[in-house]
Amino acid sequence: MDLNEIKKLIDIFEKSDLNELEIEKDNSKVRLRKGGGFIETAPAVRHAAVPAPATPKAAATPKGKVIPEGDNYIKINSPMVGTFYRSPGEGEDPYVKEGDMVQKGQVLCIVEAMKLMNEIEAEASGKIISIVAENAAPVEYDETLFVIEK
Image (cartoon, rainbow, N blue to C red; front, side):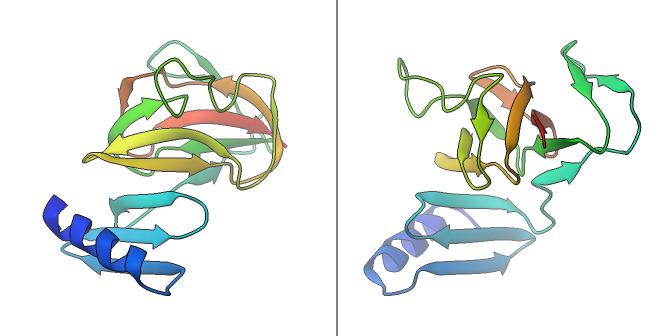
């Protein structure tokens, strides 16, 4: 799907009575949802939150940050390749900080992909233990962005 097709879909969707629309085409997936300001583009296979393996050790990321592992931790991974932003706009407060308590569905950050701002939400309630990604830095598909302690 190219950017013009996505823009046309958004325009038609905004004018419709639909609350949610999901389309898969050419190994791409687009999901539009009203009410939450959530627009998502991702490969057909999507992994947003993956429970960490049940080992009590910690893993190091390529950026040198430590990611705790165990049954009590949930990794929030990027569902796409893009640019990670901690706040809704330049000069604005970040959505969350390390140590903050979050609720399932709460917006944690934005990943910009193909000029679309994709809000990434918490998959579970808990405490933000680690913010792994750097603000305004590129992120890869399935790269860990946050670690939440249940």
